[in-house]
Image 1: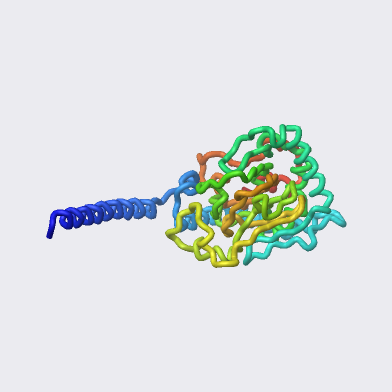
Image 2: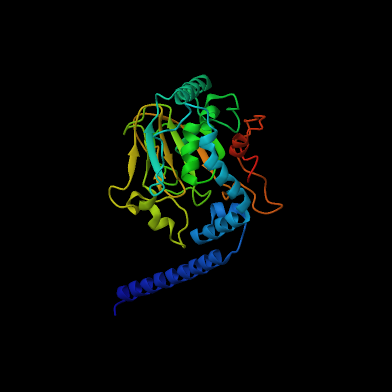
Length: 334
């Protein structure tokens, strides 16, 4: 064996040894991760394997059985409580798919919300202003700081048009976790951002309603998602850890892009459906995103002494005794 060949062979052996060492450390870390029996909501949200998430949420449902039972009753009774003519007829979220989109641009509650959000955006500085951002998305305003109980956005978020189909989908009356207006300039691609496919970490199921505030076509970074039944091959793997993923993880044709005029509203179970949006394009996109959850989600304390309720609705200071509104705001049955 000549000197060059011997040196090359040694390099291969060194690389193999290094790889074995790295793999051993990774295996030990994964074994430790799987063994952690924790109820820490921060750990579950950011680091847990799917098996750990499953255990946490199963425990949460067990411990919050009374809250779930009360919200099941509210979900059954809610349609009967509505005034005549108040309806969400035709708006339904299939459980198997976990996603549905509707052109609601002519509904008055949608039009009022769109007009209010556009006006707020313009008064805030419009496209000439830089807003707090998370890579691909800029945060224009939210129910945590700007939009209170008198806003058209809150009126929409608490309206039967959205709440009724979501309650029917969950089978329990939802909690409004928060809402806000986001701007996507669609000028760059960020591999670690929500522009790549991902699941949301809050629970095993949740609904986000995405209301387009501007017309959205293929050039303006449309929201995209694969139905839950086409995403489940990942979601149901116990060892799966949430991460940003390439489009190739879903079968060809499974990923749908949602386009439409301002007022188009897409309901998506972002914990069950792989989803992304705001990819590179030539037109900006303004969206109202509203999040609805159930009592097992990570924003709700599990044990005495836990961190307090984590809802992003601090600007909503509504005083009410209406049971459905109290439940929606997470003030009862949690």
